[in-house]
Image (cartoon, rainbow, N blue to C red; front, side, top):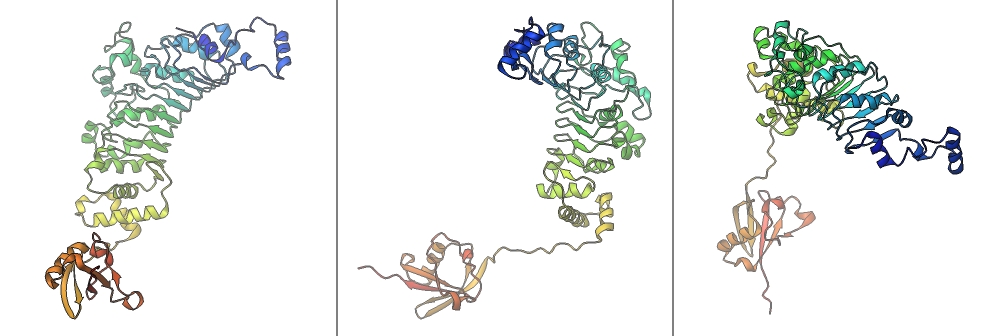
Length: 483
């Protein structure tokens, strides 16, 4: 398998061909062709080497010469397994700001992190690497400027950061984090061939400690991890107190609440705990969560900075006997501070007011015991609202029409949902004239002076489309026989 340097030369050309030239000779070559160094002598600042089979760094000296200007590095879907190789690469890229290591097999723990800090790295993508939480913690120590972290599709069932901190006022409960049934799979925690992940082992004890807060991380992506309990997510809020965007799409969270045992012991905690560690959170994506209660929507009102929310594909929506538009109105009405819901533009004044009024009208018809607290708040804002008047805009099913054939006049009720052909067959029995020999002319009594008779010549046209009303006339004429 190639080194990073070999893959670099394979994709971008022979960067090493002039490595034996002196600096003066290299400048001479440059002056012949262009006023700058030729492209083959410099590595691009945005380096994309995904799916190249890379498993190691290569010569440290050559890396230092060739890659010291790289700012963005994409090494997704390679064969990197050893974090020492990753650190060897990054240590020779002093300007690096973005790194993508997704789909590399990096579940091996970081046992001896380098004594260095990668000061300029702001965005790190580690999706589908099965990186364990111990390694995440070690990386955070090395990346003081990190602002955006991607940890999606890593099969996390727990968040094993800051596990000793008293989640709900009972630190003794945290010993459950050592239980393999409540932690991760062995692969997630560590390499079970070299470290025994049992209670009391060095691996487990590594998680039973306070994790220092990282003040830099603003965006965290944790999509597609099978985390079900919100108290696990609260640990992320403690470790990343300045978090502004949290993406948890495809995580089967069952509720936005403390653990069930806490709710039973102290129901008032349910109102404060979910948002306590997310004072700066502005964007929250909970699409495809396993949430089935409107109570969880109400809990989102407690997040003080939340403006942008995604809550698509919840089981709750399929349980509601309402249209998609009505569900959107109910969510908007319950969340006064949310400005963007499920993407798209900002919620305008008119949309919010319409939503709040629709919410009031809906719960006016419900027993007081079923009305949420938000109902009283909106009544205070808008006052009591009259129910909408139900107007049936459908045409009358039957109207009385005057039929005129020669000197004969008949008043009959007609079903306006029948078509012209149906009417002719009925008139055939009434007047004794074959339907095939009839011509019908509709006369609107309101506009007959302006419009005159209108021939009803389309056999399948329904009568209501003529706007037939009681008192109108239909004139019957016999077709002339062609000679």
